[in-house]
Image (cartoon, rainbow, N blue to C red):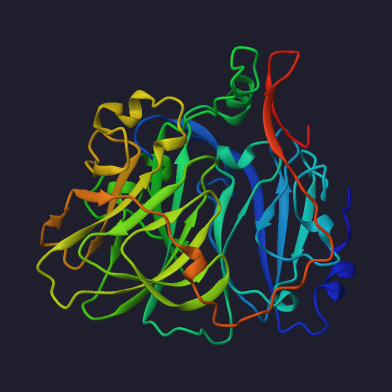
Length: 399
């Protein structure tokens, strides 16, 4: 394991350090976590709380995350989509590019933000076994000295699927002779919550969320405070293990301005589709009236689900992506939060969308056009799934 002293690593981060943004993360199990209000379970948290805190860093700084592993198994962090040129042991999957942090040990992750040439919307999560399914995941925002697009304020929108069973149980059920077809575990519910300036937004006043997670607003207990006429940047992150999402806001238009850390020209859109780990930024201009608050919708795409558990209320789903009901009360795959203009007015929920659609990301135009490097060699990979002699289903390349 590369437990290298921080004093030796800092000179490698960049030729010149404008500053060092330090975070201290103590990885622990947190009991009785219940963000969906349906089931209490333990989750992997940071410093005794869940969800792990959002990261908010400027690109002229180097990020150092001091991680203490107080779990009973090895763990890692992976800064998703970020470059670690020449320091690959600081990132990636356990046992592939980085070693796991043993129980009771500590490791300092030096994230070379100020030399990577990156900015935008990212996220950090465990990359040891399926630990991020158990909750070790958080958004990460990199702010450049000057943004390309203009807006008044920003929020981060965190989407995610949520399982009531721990990943170790799910893996045993997944890779099992009783599951020869390789049907993936289906989440029990969906989550949406918000962050701003390295903190999560609290629940709507007057609501009664579960005690352990009561500092954060989830789903119908979550809201974004809008002021008339202001333009907001929403950084949307899908932190799911399995589920894709469809996201939109009733009564408001959206314009895409960033995709996975790349600034793009404004592109109007009515609905955003996000597969696992995808990130989009959109601009939303608030309405000029305060006569109503408006529903925010985050619907899991159930097309890939082999079965639909009772918590996802299968009776509400049509066979195809059309006229999909958005009722939150019984439907765990379709979660609704809100935009709030005034606490004294009612919520407007338009209730239906005519048809889901994907984002045509090939039509998006990057602000900085970088020519594609010509290929000098082609490597063909054929991905297949098959049942092994022991009865378990596995994925493989070129078999």
